[in-house]
Length: 269
Image 1 (tube, helix red, strand yellow):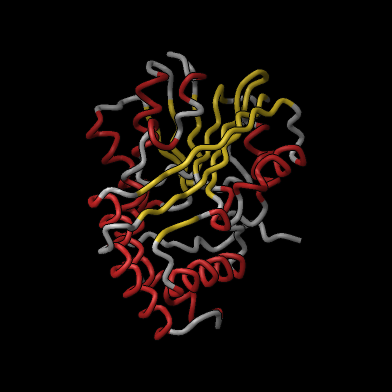
Image 2: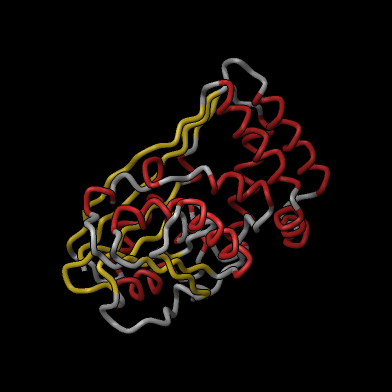
C-alpha cells in the first residue's frame, strides 16, 4: 500500500526555488488557460513560490484563489509573489492534498502542477481534488516524466543522475515517471471525462542551458537531496560530486540541449 505522505525529494533549497520561480501560467499551465473565466474560484495545490498562482489569479479575478502548500516557508515566498504581482484575490493555506480541509464542491477549478509525482498516493490525491471541485468544474494536473527526458551531449554521468534521482524519489515514496501514469491514475480516481495532452520544456539557448545546468549542479549537492541520497544508501557523496561537475561541463557545450516532456489532463468533475 502506498504511503499517503512522501518525502519531497527536491527539498526547498534556493536552487529548487530558482527553477520553480521561472514557471508561469504561459509556460506551465497553457493547457488550462483557455478554461479560465473571471469570477471562478480556484484551488492551486502545491503552489510552491506562487508564480503560476499569481498568473492564474489574474485570469480568474475577481474570483478568489486559494494557494495551498505543505510548507509554510514556501507559502511565505508565494505571498511575496502575490504582493509583487498585485494579486489581492489570493488566500494561503497549509495542507495535505491527501486530506484537503475544504467542503465538497468548493471550487470551480482545482489545479496541481508537478505535484502528483511527489505524493504517496496520487489516486487518493486526485479523489480529494475531485471531491472539492464543483460538478462540471475542472481538475487540472500536469507532471513531468523523468524517464522521457532527453539531452545532448550525453555524458554517462547524466545517465547516472537520472538513474539515481529516480531511485531516490521512489525510495521517498514518489513516482518520477508520473507523466505517463496520469491518465490511469485519473481513471482509477473516478474521472470519466478526461482530456489528455502533452507539452514540453526545451532548454537550448546559451542562457537557458547555463541556467538549467547550474541549477541542477547546485540541486545535486543541496543538503535536502544529497542527505537523502546517502541516507537511503542509493548513492555516495563522491558520486554526487561527479554528477554536479558533469552538469556544469554539459552546460558549457554549445551543442547542449535538454527536453522535458510533460503530460497534462483536464478532468471534468
